[in-house]
Length: 223
Image (tube, rainbow, N blue to C red; front, side, top):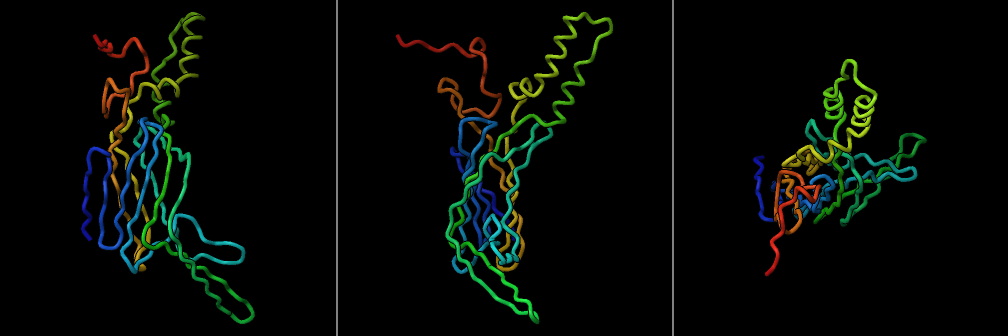
């Protein structure tokens, strides 16, 4: 089924629509590396999808694969999930099956109407980016103790330095795997990584927020 990508401005939202489930992802927050998402799935009446976590408990066995969301990163950045919350209406149906003297219990969990998810991620310099940076700090022949100590400090502070200087990704890809009407589906949503800097700069995509006051543009004083 053909997927329709819609870009809604200025709130940096991209929707992906199908006839049964309409996914929507909205980025929140003012930082290009500390990011929050509100992700919603509008489900067509009469259809259901599995929640994001397993419904298993005690001796019950959940046979469905949970809905899964992956966040992509580029070669300079790695993604760390920092929080995960859900809010949705859930139906649970329970089944009992006998196999000779053994009783099996299964639970069928379904989300109907709307699945609303809150996800927070943190972007950090990738191991590859750190290695490329430290490899560039080649050891000089006949280096003085001062130069060698400076190099060692640069290597130690590599992650911190790159976090402040690397250009963050312009877009974030969310890959959503779920099941609807007994069919496995994969939706990919692209969300622009826009962020709001200080009011004097307005909306920006790149470069990163300026860290040093000396490099910031001078404010216009009110007369």
